View 1 (cartoon, rainbow, N blue to C red):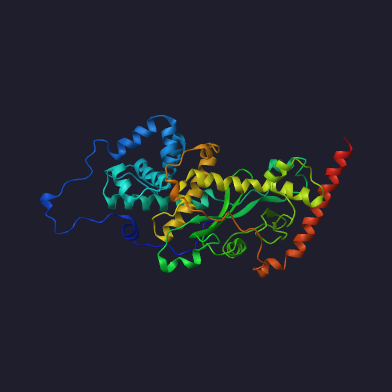
View 2 (view 1 turned 60 degrees about the vertical axis):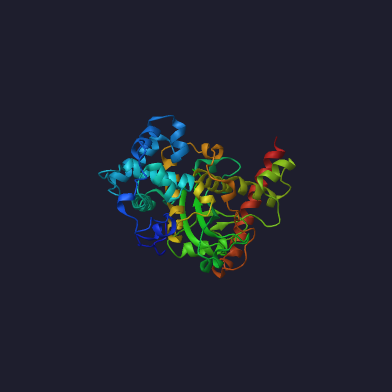
Length: 396
């Protein structure tokens, strides 16, 4: 879940400081000022029009189906996190936030779109962000300990029956002051946070650990998560990639052995030994975490750019988007739509960031001490898997 040790800013001025347009000169006479927000289509009317219109409009602007939008609003009201005000309904408050993360919209753009003052936009964006992150423990929860049905398939059973999900590190671009950038510079020399995510086989996040500097290794972020609330039950394990140590709790593929699904498919070759077979089956299951990260970033394009919010808010947004992903998944939202959706963000704004570490850097002693046991466990699984595979091939 979202780590409570992360410092969170309470400053009401931080968003204004970063993104509000320069105010008119205070010496300007009030008699010469003209109201900017004079459109007949108010924010409330615009939101109503979208929610009552074609189903694609809500997906395009708020990144979810109309029914799920209403369910989210109802949940935030039920929890007492948001309430209607004289001028702005909860529906419009939520729409302000969702439009911002869908378009990486600045406060100035949101003013024009919703016809509100800078302070009003700032206030409701912050309120909704806080409300959604307050739902983290409700919607991002530890996975079930019962084997997932996918693990009962012959190619996975009984070898992965104790697997409860997959883990990966994902980099999310950040915008930071010059004097804070260096630790966040990743191996592609862009600025990012390294965020560890764990998912189950239903494409739901079961843990998220955000905010680490882009220069930090995936294994280091995982180790920190274990020190701050992330747990792996006895006898269970997650699948990880080659950027992590292979241990009994975190099962990695064999190094130096082909296993990528696309490579295997292009070659049209059967596995030649137990290591290749293990890596193929491992990749087929671990593909779930790659899928969920892809959906997460395509649904909320703000995660692909360096947004204009203060650092703490950028970290909070990555958590809020994970909560929203799980909420949408719970309500059977379309998981294929984001991959085909148009992103209304200038492609030049999208920041190139690493997918994750290619190899484990031997940098965590706690993992190094467990690698021998992990290697033995992996060998046992792989050899049993190979024996079954050969037996089935020869019996045909």
